[in-house]
Length: 316
Image (cartoon, rainbow, N blue to C red; front, side):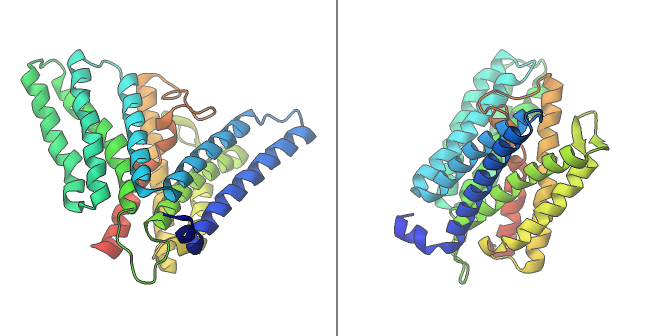
């Protein structure tokens, strides 16, 4: 996407400026707040804001620069997430680590399918072809102890990190729709922004009003107040950002609501995995947010849900 095309795409330019504006506002707010009330504990919020800056810049660059580099960036993100979750997994057999090589080889294949828009192959390669292939490779290794667990865990890791994120890349390959100027980049910005802002508001409302834990055994800090407040706020914002999508007013409300719920699901699913392993974070790559998987946990679900809603409504 060259500069002329980018300037002409007012919808995408507007949302990028909006994201940057919100981050500047949050940064200044917490800075001034800390100066006026030094006793306020703003460390976590400041760390999260720095992390949001990093993530926002990564996704903005992935959208603005050459499409091939964008696909490479998403592929690299998938690789890092898969490596992270496979590294922290407990009770991993030696044979499983050797099988993981095939999972890494699957990453460029999946993103090449996304880049070329081969939808039918794209949707079956990992959940069907790789599931069968991984199971067979585990069998021929001849180590049957806990093989059933490995047949379940490895494909799930591949689905959660590679298959899910590849849907974000495929959005960039969707054909143009008459009257819809934002295109795939607009759709990508919409789902990423709505997903992340939902995380922000669920966290914020939970901090401000949270009293009743929603799943205390999995994530004690998640509350009904934060969940409901985040969903309402996200749904309203999605309505006003519908210009990034081909959605009608009603569709934008429904889809934003679904994304908010799906984001919560992704968050608690990864939280459950971390609790099983006995870790607070999957890594320490991103200050204030832990590892890669800690930040894409919601996107791992919302990307797939959003893509197939859009595809079935407007592209099938």
